Length: 112
Length: 116
Image (cartoon, rainbow over all chains, first blue to last red):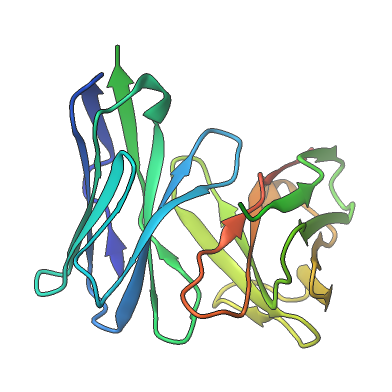
């Protein structure tokens, strides 16, 4: 049973527009959520995180929103740039620094 | 930012060979390191969690005698794939995390292992 779900395997967005990547989770014990970006043949790069005591965290062009009641989080990238094209993984962990559980990823393509 | 170095980045070897992959945290002490495996177009699958100075905790279905993990210091963990076979061919990625709560894991660049 997948505890972290990214239901969109791919997303195409025009340069300059907003990219919205979605993630749902089922485990109510999760309290720390992260987004990673991954290029082919490289390890994931940490982008942004949010703890369950917040509902929004912003870092430059990247904003993560958390809706605990819906068990849903999203990553907004605005404005989108061609260099943002990559696979984005959502990840979550429970209290106490347990291992991260990853979604299957969403491939973002930003078209110039 | 935190840097995790993984070596080698690519290995091609014959069936039956044992292969060692190193994972180093370069600018922080990593109490915990993780080893993942990624199949094409799949998510990262956690193989094992290693804590410095103690035995690794393996996920269900991962053979501990096949995938030997050593975490002898706060900056180095190794994964040895013993007697590798073609089905062990995959992309292996390590990550490291400090012991401060709610810190992100930082990943190495992965090792592509191809067994002929």
